[in-house]
Image (tube, rainbow, N blue to C red; front, side, top):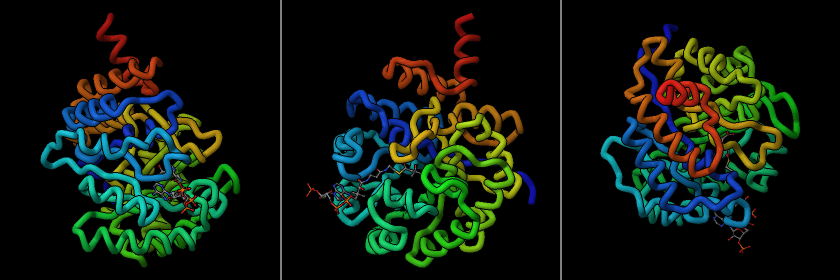
Length: 302
Ligand SMILES: CC(C)(COP(=O)([O-])OP(=O)([O-])OC[C@H]1O[C@@H](n2cnc3c(N)ncnc32)[C@H](O)[C@@H]1OP(=O)([O-])[O-])[C@@H](O)C(=O)NCCC(=O)NCCSC(=O)C[C@@](C)(O)CC(=O)[O-]
């Protein structure tokens, strides 16, 4: 398999990036972040989620954020929906794609969505059916595909099992997430190979967290298998609130720098992306989690 010549990045910053922020982030700031990401050339943006506001208060403004977007043609706006209640709320806001989110680990499934893996699939099935009937695309996020904060290492067979369940209910593409950032290149490849039992390479994306600074190596390992869709988060924001010990997502700026350095096309303007990251980092009052952004900003200032 040769390395892909183009890559599509799904920026999860507005959703995964901000969901765990303790300080309130106004809807207007989230909307501005989405606008800046699309202006930088990001073609897929995970905007928000329709989950319990008691569990994730930061996403309670989902309707306001979706309603405030000035949509750009060619950009896919996706949202997370864990159950029919979430889907029914989401569909009012006309997302292009809904994301059901399961886990390869039983303990994580319980902590994150308060049900077993099997129960989660029962909840997702009517969501997927309704979305497809309404012409809305469906993605399935698979958390803990290499490791779980509660169960430790996760065997690839469990990823294959979850991918099979997702395929069985009609999910169209899946994310292989290293939720706590413990994957090594070989383990990440094994998880992707497990997903390949049920999905084609074009239907798989990699979502790597960066606990040990290894997410870029894992990106390379996924590219080697032909994966060309990846999730990342501007300024390295965020992570799942139910993944104890996890550090942030890999920063979109760092992934873009790597890809462009390899001659891989992304359609993203790195300078504009750095500006988007700087906008949200300044709002949050802390430096960007992207090493590339920090270096480029220092160069600009210098
Ligand atoms: C899934 C539930 C809702 C189950 O929560 P539950 O308590 O089991 O649900 P329930 O059906 O028993 O309902 C309890 C209450 O929640 C309400 N409720 C029920 N469903 C909804 C909904 N959709 N939207 C709004 N409210 C909802 C429902 O109406 C009721 O309200 P009450 O009567 O008590 O006032 C809950 O566990 C939850 O919200 N969990 C949050 C999950 C989450 O957002 N996690 C972070 C995203 S996953 C992630 O970040 C990982 C990922 C995707 O990035 C990939 C990776 O890196 O690994």
